[in-house]
Every structure is written in structure tokens, then in C-alpha cells.
Length: 577
Image (tube, rainbow, N blue to C red):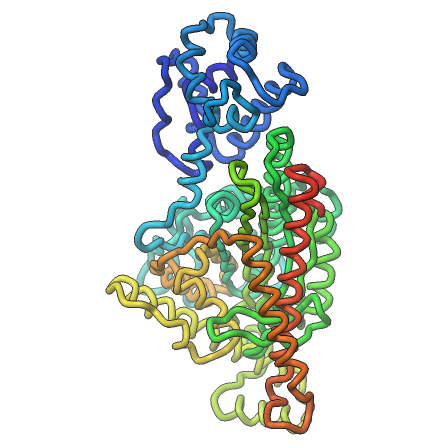
């Protein structure tokens, strides 16, 4: 009866849409409207979607098309009060090709109103999108985050949407958080609050998304992002999973459910989830999956030549993150025994390749990414126990490194800290500038940064290439009051960002294959003509090699997915292919 109510009254327009359901031919009872899919969140909608498909297949067996009598029998099995008149009222709408029969795909199209669903999922965002900024309070603990000696500023409480910082003169209220996650908040609570909307935008609305994690060293950014290593040994949800494994699990379960629901529809599709990792260290960019190989980047900040690995199950992330951890630059300070001395961007890329069910010879390809950017902690040298390195001294040490001089640990950490603080400050300045330009309806150019790899990379969010969400992690230790105040100031700046957001483009897969083939041939010709040493063009050798490697990998992925879609159709095996 429940599913019959779904059939009568509701259509799945979009997993994030609030559009009213299309009017049915016959008015549905109140009970049916109460269980409308439109009122469910995205996860419940996908589960219901799968359940409806299961009950249809159980009742109809291997039937691939339905006559009027077949559907009447099915509906009356679900609800004995269903009449022939009601069936006639919707049968003509179901029969899209007017063949006199309704096939499985036509049935799903009617039940879930897939035309409207696709239209909503591909609709562009309107106007400027405000950045959502969340705040997480770390519990009192060790590594510089115990009780400690009180300084002039201190964290002085919080509410659901505000944080208070007090000094001798005033009590400041920061209202930037969309929500404050208290020390008691679990990893699951954090994911539900911070990532629910962002992951839906990534999975359903084909939008590139970036989560920016900021805070003083040791406030739990890495724990929030990933969780402890041992939690990744299970493919089933673990209480300690961080945001990254939970997002990967959601993507994998959504793919599985989607493919299961379409298994008998005749639709041809393959889906693939891949992961990559980049480190930003001392102004440069490195591939953490390729022995920390230096990467080139395009003027807009896009990395060139990075490697990726396929993720088929959540436990695949363990080996992936082990490689990342082994290659990432870490160093112990007074504030954190395992302090990250670099920024790290971990990206999940979801790609789909399939055929238009009404045009089997027309293949599409769609790719979008979810990036979690784990920022190195902002710090004060006297608190971290590192050397203060600024201005001329930074240049002198940098010159010495170029000449082969070995720095002391304090000098090295001092340079790292100076570069980290400089980049964080530059990003905040550009966010303010981008917001002002966007509000004046002027086009912001992602070439105004001082020019480090990180600032250019994050600048992609300011011009609409990614939707930015941020989480600011705070210490409640009295001795860290100055850092907590600065983090709140930074969060307030992030919350002011308003930028356009563009969705990923759907491309013709065969045309894309032809274009990448031509680009590969051109890149190969240019690279082979570039000597590694001894020529004026040798300085482009690494960039041209990286370009060739990247276009080769992209072409291989498109070809594999296109072949899988043609051979296997929409099956769970196609996910792994």
C-alpha cells in the first residue's frame, strides 16, 4: 500500500529539490501524500527508490514490458482498491513511445518523474552562493591543548551558532558559524552537519565541491577529515570515520543503489570513483601518490600530471591514506608532536559514462570532484618552538638552500611556518577581494594571487569552478586564546565569501575520446621534440611530460568507461570496471 501511494501521488524530482509534485490524474488519499518522496532527505529517497524497484521486480518477475492488464494487476496487488478507471488515467502518461505497452524504463520514468529530476539536477545555480562555515570545538586534551596558563584572550563559551572570545576589555561574539559542533559532537554528527549538503551537491547536482579545514595546529583538523587509521579497516560505517571516508562510503553506496535500481531497465552505464592527493609545501605542488613528484600547474591552479587510484570499497582508502601519510611532510613541534608542515588536498573524482536510453548511439560523459583540503595549522613561532623567520632572513635562508646549505631543524620549521602563515593570509585577502568583485558583478580573475600553488588552487573556488565549504577547528585551552581569536577572525572572513558556482559539463563521450586522442598525439609530439637538458626549451620538459601523462590517463579512463558501458550496461560490475 505504501508503494502504491508513491505511485499515485509523488514523483522524485530531485534529491535536493523542493519543487511541488506533478498533479496526478487521480487525487491521492492523504495517507499517500504523507509518504511522498519529496519530503524525504536524499539518503532516504535513494533507499526508497531501490525498495520500489525491488517490489516491482518481485511481483513481475523477468517481465521487461507491461500491458495495461499487467500494470492493473500489479497495482491491485499493492492496493486492492485500485480501479481500472484510475489505471486508464495514468497508463497513457506512462506509455511514452505510444507502443501500447509500458517497458521497465518508462515505468521508472513515470514513478520518479525522471525528466524533472534530470532537469533539476542539471539546472544552473542562480546568483552568488554564500560559503557555509562551521566550527568544531576540540575537547581538552594533551599536545598543548590541556588547561595550561591563561593568556590575555580566551574562548569564553559558545551557542549553537555563535562563539565568544573574551579579553580584559570586552567579550566578542562571532556569528560566522552556520553551526557550532561542541566537544561532545561525534564524527557522525560532524559529517551530517558539515557534509550532507555538500555531498548531495557533488553526487546529485554534478558540482565540484571543496571543503576547507582551518585552525591552529593540533585542533583536530586531520582527525575531523580522516579519523584514526584503524577505523579504515572496515567497509562498513565506523564510529571514528572522518569526513573523507564517510563521503567515499556515501558515494559508493549511492552508486551501488543506483546501478541496482537500473539493472533491469536496459540503461547502459558505467561509474568510477578515483582518489588523488596533492601536497602544497613551501609554495610548490607535489604528487603524494607518485613519490612526492613535483607537479606543474596551469595558470588557474589546476594541477598537471597527478596520479590517481580507483576506489572500489572504503577499505581501499587505508592503503591510499597510508601512502599519503608516508609522503606528507610532518614534523613535531611543542604544540603538536605530529604537526603537518604542509597543506594537503585529497580529491574524490566521480565519473559517469552512459547512453541516452532513447538514443543508444549517443553516449555521455560527466565528471566532478569532491576535495578535502587539510590546511597546515596556523602558528606563532614562540608557541610552536620554531624560529621566527621573516622578510630578509627568509630570502637569505631560501638562497642558502638553493646553494646546498643544510638548515637546522628550527630554521627549517621557521621557514615552513612563515610560508604557511603567508599563504593563509593571502587567501583571506583574496576572498575579501573576490567577494567585492562578485557583488559588483565584475569578473574576478584568478591571477591576482602572489603566485604560490596553493593560493592559485584555492582561487578556483572564487571564480565558480568549485563550491567552497569550510570548517574552523578551535582549541578551548586557556593558553591558546590568541590562536583561537585569530581562527575566529579567519572564519569570519571566510563566511563573507559569495561566489558564483558552475556545474560540471556533460560531454559527448565519443567526441571527448576523439578530442583527447588528438590532444595526446599533439602532446606526445611536443614532448618528444623537447630535450631534457641543454636547450632553451628544456625548462618546459617536466611540464610537457606531465601534460602527456595526464592526457594519456584521461583518455584511458574515458575509453575504459565507454567500453564498460557498452559491454555491461548498468550493472554493479560496471562500477568496478
